[in-house]
Amino acid sequence: MTDTSMHVKRCPECDEWTDAKLDNCTHCGFPIHEARRSEIKKRRQVDDIHIPIWRINKDDPFWLKIFKRPVQLVQLALYSIVAFFIYLATAFAH
Image (cartoon, rainbow, N blue to C red):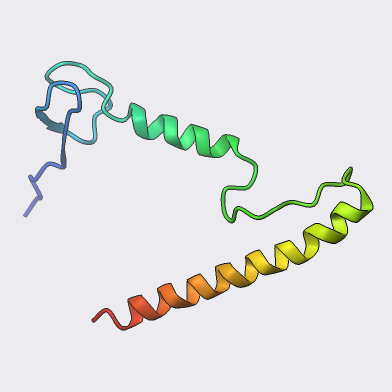
């Protein structure tokens, strides 16, 4: 038995349903995956997209490096607390 179902997506330009595997809409030719591609390209241009944390640069003055280190530790502590609460929320969501 073969799967004849087609994954479809609504075109943002003409509002018609089209095959999601195709790059362009079959009705109007609009590039339906262009917004996704531009978002991926924008995210790849960023150096560190994982955790937004205050960076310590090599050319920072010594006093600024001393100030930034505790700020980083507080940021990481807050991220871990938030992650723990997200874990609890998903664990008890049944």
